[in-house]
Image (cartoon, rainbow, N blue to C red; front, side, top):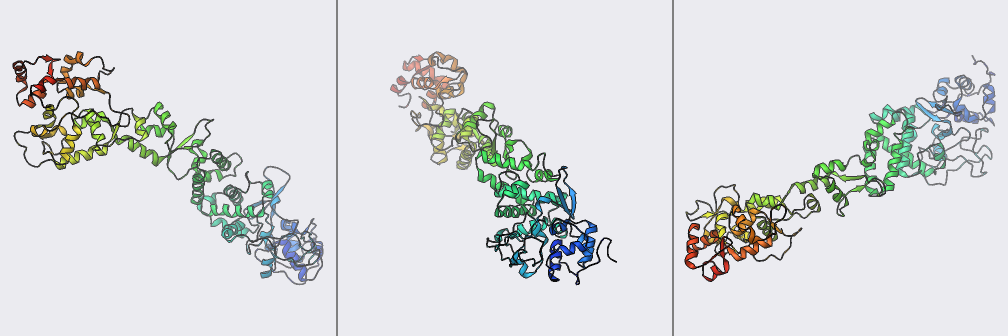
Length: 623
């Protein structure tokens, strides 16, 4: 029984629909098969009044039922592919069309004119649903540019006359394929996926949506199509602003297709594909502050107030830095630190951090322009390496205490290469004092332990640090002594197998060839120490630290605020005066007998000691 309102007239033969055929295309094909001139009789018989045939894609269920009756097809087949008109959520006058779960803005549906893929029509002569989607400038089957204008008469292809889907309904000529280049094959996979996800074909949309990663299926297809275009245009730079119906219409077909394909690729590989691209883009931008800010702004639009529901959560999952403070930049997979963490790891105060940030050798990334508040990002591995340098370097004083040598002795070891100075700028910022690589200290001690003579030390042996008192007149040649030890040219023994220089035993006479160190003309980073601690000053003078008070007048007024003596004054005094300890070692007598010997020799005391030149003239000290 014919539906109410129809005239009862029908096409003689049924129209068998293709799975992805459009409704106006099916009507036009049926009219052409019956050699009718125009499509108007079908609509009149179905009592359907439309401005043009293309609007049949959005016909009401009742209209579709009447049209199905007239063209002799299953009403459900027409209704299943038709779009349902829905009002725009913003309340504006334009309408959208809903195809299954996908809502397509009316402005993105080509219902007024006929777009075709001539090459695809040669294989199967019917009008595809996806050709009505204005987001697709190319056919997803043949990758040819879709055609909507007859090249022979330069008139838009329409639906009024039924010359054939591939023919111009004005001049009747067969429309040839576009002479524009096909879509590049490298974009084909992504473009076809985008075509399926954005198609008026509900079954195609459902299949594409179900193939996406689980996190994306929390967003409906319309939101994902929008997200693909957003990400695609960001990656390709096809439009400087977020895509809209206005900016999309201004894009070239090539730019739109590439953006759609690239954006679909991000969806299919979410989140890793997007993360990898952002990381590579971030590396490529280097220190281009403006470009970084521009890219960050585009990405932040995806989580802003106009974001599609559900999309911000996806972006924050993939790119957590985008939702954070600007100093976090874009990086998502590279480890980095900001100011506070760098300060903590390096152990710097604010003044040291100011020097650190201003140092020309610093490797860091500026996120904002110098005129604004400086936002700096530091590579985590780089900072960890600097922290290892700071932590792996010890001051000369601490090394001296560990080795039980004077600081000037440690400086000698550095000058002669037995120890290494840490001259990295971060070590110099950490402290004004010279710093030494701790690994070289450990290596030196391991060499000393490995070179020590095995077995019990001879009875004549004495501790090195005590026997060295026989060397006077200035700084002791500690570097030369230790070089002789590790070079196995001077035998020595260890009290403990894991001890320090305080455990070294030597035969005192083996130190006889060593004389005071010459005046040092070589330089170290930061210079040589100009003041000596009381302990080091006493060591150079071969007296006890408690006896320094007695020679204070002889040292002059060169002490600093920390009570340290001026090095030049100590060296000068050591060159002029010798004390009982040194004299006793060289004469082979007890220190208590030195004073009596000096009286016998007629040598008067000077500054609690005796004049060195007189002692040498008397043969009591070596020249």
